[in-house]
Length: 180
Image (cartoon, rainbow, N blue to C red; front, side, top):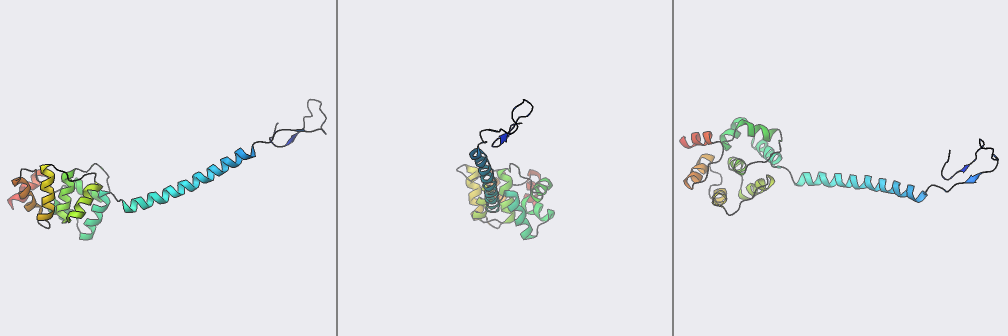
């Protein structure tokens, strides 16, 4: 058996057991580099995990923030549905931190229902991957967030419908809210 970096004596082939042959040592530098790389990878991984934790604290998801806002207002299912005109499934998805592709209208319904100010609403939209742009619908939402801040979702939907924008929340519930 050959061992790198050690002397080897072969008695089976009739060689002198007293005479040893020096074999080239295994590359100590290579081994050290591998160990250093392994240590460096562990340090980098630990640093990555720290940065990821910080990022998650700073950059929370829409569902995390929506859930925290609902908790701060003491909202249960009933209050959520009344104030946002959204359904049980949406409530469940927020409460269980389901991360999904949130529809802009759903996020807007939540913002109106929670009485989010303009800055908070824009942040919530961004967390869900949306922004208010130049479309007529987005201009109506922008106006709604300032001029109708604090008003009921029923009032906001009347404004939207009057401006040919689809109302927020579930269509069936929007019709009920309009009749009140």
